[in-house]
Structures are given as structure tokens and as C-alpha cells.
Image (cartoon, rainbow, N blue to C red):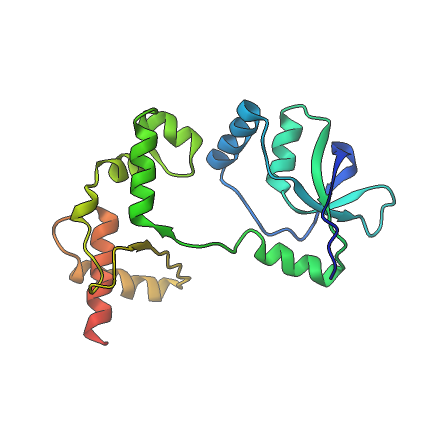
Length: 204
């Protein structure tokens, strides 16, 4: 799988979505993306390849949402990086390009939100960022010094996400266990995190 990092302006009507693209974006985040492009004119170039079946057309590998946003904004051309990728390579990219990423350093995230909050209100920030107004306000109001340090391993505290797929029976069992272990104080998310940790520690 070779890549051509050539960036071209390609007509929107020549850009076709890949039918196997699994990535989805919420309506709220899509509107934020569209507003960002509208206000700044900036966006990452779409990653495309020459269409394998339609001569003169290009198939989008990464940037389906950006392409749709540009269409809705009335743009007739899009900046595109043209890659030379075969079908298998495209499937790998479709599965990874929108999934790979790091974790948020909670302290740095808080500092960033605090700095942005000096200029923007939480409602305005929620329109610009992927975070909700409630999350932004919570991060803004946290005192960094109050964050616990994990076993003295330094000041980095990371936000981690766990995703579970449960059937109805499993869901009922898990919910019952979490409710029993859930502390009285804290937000719903904090209480659930504490409950899951407590359950895990019992079988550690």
C-alpha cells in the first residue's frame, strides 16, 4: 500500500463516499464541524483514492463528514490528499483512521478548558468543542490540585473509556451489582466509576 501525499482541489461531484465506511457522527457534532469550517475555512484535507470503478471520480477513504459538511455549505471543491491504496488497504484504513487516538490528560484538559473559559462561555464552547456544556462547566470548575494522584506515579491523570456490549440478562446482573456498590456522593458518572472500581477490587 503506497501513498501519494499530493493535495489537490477536487470537484465535490467527483467525490464519492465509500459504501463500507463504518464511521458515524452525531448530529450535534456534525453541526459543530460544519460551523467550524464555515467560520474558519479550515479543515483537514480529505483522504481519497482514484475510484476503482468510475474513471475520473475519487472514492473517499477518510473525511466523509467533512465532505458532507462542505456540500451543505455550498462548496464546489474540496482539498484532498490522493493516496494509492488497494481495496484491502482501504478497509484497514476505514477501520482505523477514525478510531486511533490517544487519551486526554485530565490535568491538561482542565487547564485548556480554563483558558478557553476566560474568553468563551460554556454554551459557546459547547458549540465549538465535542464536549457538552455540562462537561465543560465541570472541568472548568475543578481545582487541579484537588485531583488525586494515582499511586504517586506522577501528576498525569488520564480519562479512559470502557465500552461494553451486554445482552439483557447480563445488563440486569451488571446494573444490580453497580447499584449495590454505588456510593452516595458524586455525579452519576463518578458514582458508576467508583462502583465498577470497587467491584473489580473485590476480585483483584
